[in-house]
Image 1 (spheres, rainbow, N blue to C red):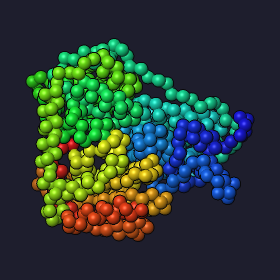
Image 2 (cartoon, rainbow, N blue to C red):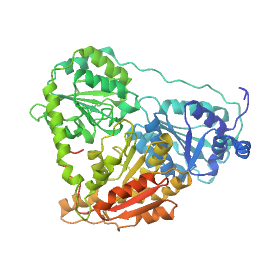
Image 3 (spheres, helix red, strand yellow):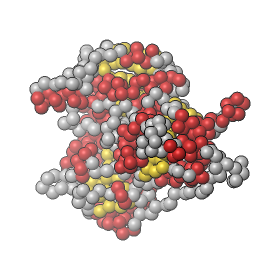
Image 4 (cartoon, rainbow, N blue to C red):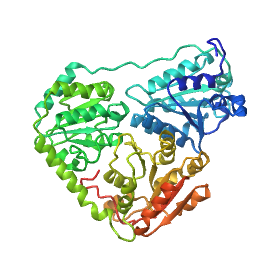
Length: 552
């Protein structure tokens, strides 16, 4: 191909995406975006010759699944995911998933189809101005009107999506622009490097040296920024106890003496300094309020970009930039390990005691089944490279409490936006990103209703996943609080649906389990099936996740 060769918009877009390391396009078929498909598969000649396609094309049954899958690819691979949706309802169906990626800081590019410019304003099929709909939940949202600008615009979109602070970028291309061959303008861009401010590093180091009961919280941006090794070196060098959440789970393995996630209640209530790295000071962290009320803990916020540093609460210090450089610089500035070993050991002992106290739940023979018993059977069956996905409320809260990954980047959940239905899309991405690793999707029966039809997509694309549904025939996360507030509940009941029958009808496999002793063998069959396999486990509807404990 010469520089002067004319390329239609789909070829330009796919060329730009490939240059950024993208390997997979997730989509739901629509005529507005046919040129993107033509480019992904390499055109008719490539199909007829059997030559490898330039890009893997995965089609789904609902646009939100395509975008969830693209988001998960961005999370897992740290290369922006790529979703293509058709005009109008294709874009509006994707909005919740785009919003989740925005809140999660997940790198992703979404290209939307668009009614043709030549007919704009005359009522063409699915004509609607998309960028205003998603402007507030993307890093940018634009329309490409010139066929020579498609490659440069897509290149810029991937660069922007993958640059800190990461997030989704949306662009749409009118149908007539996308189909028109043109000599592309522009060139492949490169991201800039980010160094933290030395004065900020010194301030953080000074605060840290004066602490006697510090705690470090590691969040998903530690993984997204490629800072997992620097983070571990930082806490190891200084002897800092660690609470991990999101995709930072696994930065410290479960047996690490500084991992105190299960002691978070005591840690947060007694700490005199909390260093939060790579995650916002949101509701999950008490909005940044820690320590005794009479002497609140000082808070340090470390973020991948200045825009993410908290402004709603007082900070003792902050630093932003490449988080690997931030962690390394702080460790060097502090120098020697801190004299806090007794504090770290105390928290580790509390964490181990909390883990030990869970044993009766994990081994419960109660019938109806205690949801924790599922994890008692699952945990010994998870290999260190397994990818675990949570999509649900109460049942996934138990997962957050019991599952401690051995490696970072192997845990996926909907994140703080809390949009259910992520599971099948996340599972697609996990199976593609880690084809040799077990993929386990944990779903509540409520969450299953949002997206179970896309098991059809997993079947058609030959993407085997072990799916475990905890079926308590209701919305447990709402049922129990409503009873507490009102003494009754409404709009919280579901049927004890045979979700395994649904999966079998879609070409997968599965079974129902109603006895605790049958769970383990069923999970084994799901892991070994070689097809999407759903284990529908009927659990006790009266058991709610115990949120007043030190569980997470």
